[in-house]
Amino acid sequence: MGKGTITGGGTDGLYDVDISYHRGSLDDNVEMLAQALIDIQTKIDSVDSDIDALSLDLSSLTWEAYNERTKQINSKIRERSFLKMQKLSIEKRIDVLNDIPESRSLTDTGGVWCADFAEELSGEVGILEIPGESVSFNIAPSGGGTTSSGGSGSDY
Amino acid sequence: MSFIAKSVVFDFAVNWGDTKKGVRSIEFFLDGTLISVDSGTCVCYAKSEYSTSFTAEMAFYTSLSKVDSSANTSWLSSAAQAYQNQRLIIVFNTETEFDSIVINNYHSYGGSLDRAVKNTKIYTSTSSITNTTYGASIASGILIFDDTIRQHVSSNVQDDIVLSLVDPNIIISCPSVVSNSVPSVGDIIGDASTPVPTVHAKSFASVGDIGLMSYAQCPPISSSSTLDIASFSQKLSCPLGVTSSTLTISSVYDLISAGFACSRSTGSLGDIKERDLGNADVRFILTITGKNDGLEDIEIPMSSFQYRWTYPGTRFIQVVVPTLDYADQISDRSNGTIKVSRYFPDYEFYQDLIETFTIYSLRPYRGTTNSSIVLTGYAAGYPSVDPSYVPTFHYIDAGYKESGGDFPMTLTWRIPYYPFTAVGSDVFVSGSDMLRLLSVNATYTADQKDVTIRGWAYSG
Image (cartoon, rainbow over the protein chains, first blue to last red):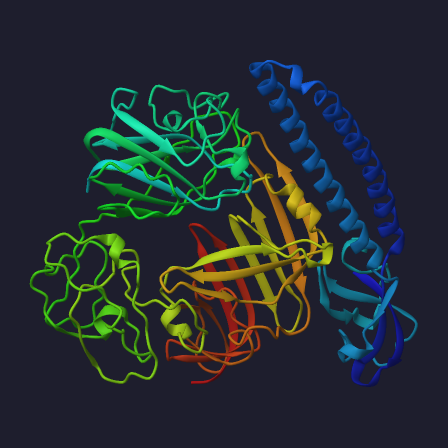
């Protein structure tokens, strides 16, 4: 269950509502991911150094040694590719989390029904939602229960 | 099915990305027994060779190792012929019978996989062929393979790829009357010397009311009882507007590769109706667009995709790339989009199905034996690219009802061939239910085609 703020309506139990998202939790996630980014960049730098070192004096090697060295370099290059994609993955996740607003108005979606059709609600109300399916909401009976709302930012 | 050849010619076009093309080993088998090849049994030729450590015969000699270093154990084209098509030839000292070709594609210690050959044509000939020019005509040449060859697995192991060779001796001729059946590969219903001239058009292609096959493009019938498959490269076309229900033919049709004698090199969905594509072989092609990153688009292999669209929400697609080999190319296009197209090889018909999906997640996975990349994309708003995708009246005859009941109610259908059917559109399923589609969920792998649509039955 999440939280919203009534901004209008009420007739027959149909309200205009702004859904509140728990930005604090999302910000914690972003901070954690930012640290992970730093760690991965450190690993990428380390692999880059390894590749540079392995690439020295290749022309002086015997054929067998050259093949072995090339194998090592290719392994490092694959490792770097993997890390680079991991880094991108985290960056994109951070973008997604940062794009989640503190609140979202549901006025344009036709309003939100209160589960028991209560008509006298105002202020903060509890919102019934299906986790991960942020398309359908209801106001809890009599507006009860108010915690922050919204998919990955939910307290639940 | 077996082949007798003095020469076997390999024409290699596009490979897996590197400037040079290479093969680790090519082996010939008869009845499951490896045919031993060495300097005493053959002479080998190549358009180019990287060095004396990567000569033509090193692809064929059966005593050479298929693991560890590729030097002195494989053929590799010259660096000076970057990206050029190549030809590789083995000329046996005596005519040799084989029924299978097994390839280990190029690798060295399980790496350098992008040098591996890909788009390949293989010909046999009873003559000694020594012309190493790619695509040059081959005396008595018979095309026995025309397809792509996958890369070697990314580890230092033997990785046999058994090629699916085309039997050049299949004869498919024309029965006097064929009704409601489609000749397929392996059918021998006549021979080239006694063709029957009249056949009902529908019996060949199930093209229904599209039109009839054109016979003008058929090669002349051979007096030989064995057909030269290479001469059948020109497939038949389906001209529109032909209304006659019978077709007089004077030649043998190329039904060999497709089991379906209808082909269009160009066309639109308006020409080939969706209902006629329903049971055709279909390949899905994944493209990552590079425009937003200043790069070319790339096609990369995928092992599966999942697609979901619930009206009227955003559409999602998740694609699994079964290798990390393309990690850099994908990362370089991280601001790009995912595009899935479909290709009907029988028709040579390529269709951009859906508008592109913005990549919002890309995750690499690495296990002990396998690696993969999972890409997730979304598209908002209603698609507007392909005419098959807008809300039109679809007729689907390849599905079956999973659940449902009396009209009016929500019905669920399984329609394995229509993963991108448009939500919001009207679908007429097998003539029994008309649905206004509310959701589509599709899961496609090499072995599974699972598409579920749910819709509101509003008539019928």
